[in-house]
Image (cartoon, rainbow, N blue to C red; front, side):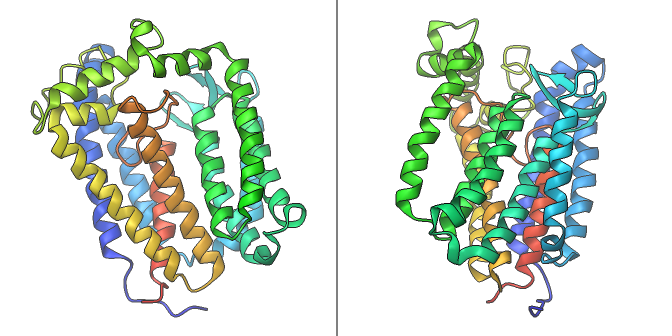
Length: 366
């Protein structure tokens, strides 16, 4: 086994904790008005976020001490369990419907989102497959096709909910891992053409997705409908200026921007803390990605390297999509901002993933 270092990557720990603390503060600030109106408790969302953050942080510390190669043994079982959960969540009366998607299992506020678990399970399984079959990855039939087939099966099941955002993050993460493993560019070009055609078909098949695309291109064409969220998000970011209106002083959180504590929390942060506050948060994510890349490059074996690559790619893709949506650069997809947005499964699983990454850092070559 690789020789263990005395401590994990401290910079990664500091950046993660800083983002988590900022997230707790911003969830309260963004949700206080809505929580008071809906539940007569301004701390409703903040208390739940604190609970999930505490559970996730403890889980991160635990995962930081579990040797990362242990997950290689459980990779197949993890994927099987997640596929079973994805099937169960689709059963009418069992899966909970929120925001038009049947994506949750549980009771009330305490529920899990199987698609979030599938993202991590797929990273672990693909890291194992690529580590064992790297020499075959240049072969379309023996390397690329088998790895992508399972990914697309999981994507298809997630789309049955439907949850395009989570599915896109999972596929994007897996594509990055396969690319890093050495797949041929020509194969990616061919698959990209097929993927674009399939993506276009998914958009055309659902009217609400077409509206999201058209509202992204011109949100003011339907300011009270499909373009409402993007417009209200920009109305939040613009007045924030350089230094912001001040913590707790957001105007858009007063029932203008729907559910401001989730997907659009960065808009409220930018309104209250300004351009500099937004840049500071992006810089913290930059530290997470920088340290994650160093960990992936210095991992003692292929499995650890691919595992770290997948976790870093997942974080990077979610951050880019979320901030892209909030700033009007991308269509609305329903992706949370890691460590900041309100959420149970998404926050907990992100901290678990970072705990695994921290364990890899304990064995990284200096």
